[in-house]
Image (tube, rainbow, N blue to C red; front, side, top):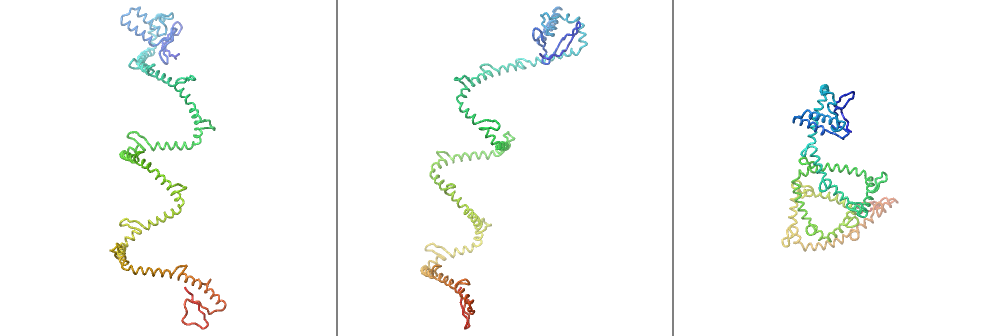
Length: 443
């Protein structure tokens, strides 16, 4: 029952009566005949107003006022509890005096009339207010052919029946995929703290990585930015700024796709046609166990050394930039005149038109041939470490020796034995003593 606020009271014969009450939710009274609301009171007021306009008789006016009073009091005008105004109040003057003494209640009744008008506006009709909203709601709720009712019916059909052996809809799908669902449940695992399994175990094991990835995703979202028209940021901002270049690149990509081709054209077809050659090349290139890859790895130290040598060589060769030559290029530039002169001196080797040294070689071909034979013979006489004069000189030096071996050591040893007049000299003196012995040291 709503909490009511008493607006008007009257004491009659020692008893206080509530003449009019107001609830916190609506102006509603309770009577033995049921709930009586504003509509009943307003209807009685309208009837009284209409009657007065139509020149009611005094009895009709009295009856209308009595009817209005009883409805305000929440009484059925036809019931035994109904009263006339005369019965309720001793005289009309009592009513007038009461209303005069309690003007605030008259104002409250006036406010009630204003509230009734506002309530009528809120209730509205087919075009506005609650009446329209209820109609719209009925449309939204719908029936078997439209609205939520149809949607629910369709959903029920989709969900289907769970009758064992006659499953339909989603229940049939669940039954058909029961094994997959069990497998999925097993893969998802348990989230029991301390005993996680499946995906939950992976999530727990990778909690740190997941947190890091979350931060990375946030950073990525920031980098991607906003695509709000006119306020693009991040990558979207770059895309907008470089729209022309992107369009050009799109054209280039199309051309590249044509170049790459597919099984019937382009590089893809070329690779397929040359599969055996590519396979052979892959074998040649090899990996860590064979081919060039292994050779490079095995010779890493030498390659590193060569890299340094190449860098040094590049530095020595220098730059050929005109006006700023360095290294060999600088030497070539500095000696350009000498090189030109040398080229002239060397001359041309064109058969029949030899010049310079080539002309001299041609003119002295016979002598050169003879000299070549003599040179070969001389090379044989001079020899090397195994024959000829070179070997003889080496043998002689070994025989002569030094302080540690050979004749030099022998002479020194003799001098130590009293042969004080043995002298080791690089050449014989002009005069010698009768008692001196000279040993000439060969160089």
